[in-house]
Image (tube, rainbow, N blue to C red; front, side, top):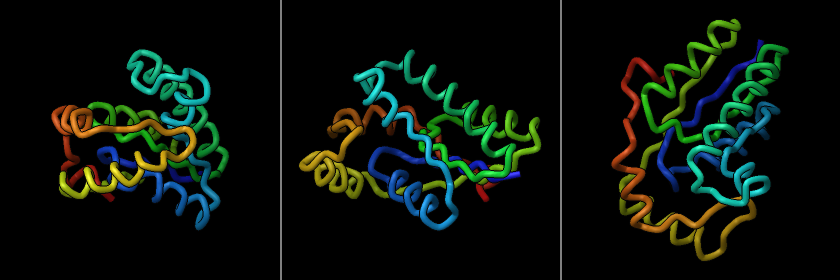
Length: 148
């Protein structure tokens, strides 16, 4: 069995960077909702379609991990319920999960997002300060028992 990595954090926290590192070091498949939203939906803020994209990506991730490959889910996992559901589905298939939390102070997130927004990488979306504040309001930091 492979390992399913759940990257938890706000925009600008370093999830995509860590995902790329895990891909290099472990040969992991990285599944990013933002990338698919950009390339297929062409709208990163469509919540209903984002849920659908993440569901398809999770199904792929569970299949790959069940076959022995490591997979990184670069979703952000803002809610405890979302994280618990993903871990339960993986566990039901015998797939090990690792929940990795990336955090940074709000001022640092704003700084990182400004740098990213100034030279937006492909298949990403600009995140302004107002949107970051919305995300902060929605975000439920993981508890100690959720982390590896």
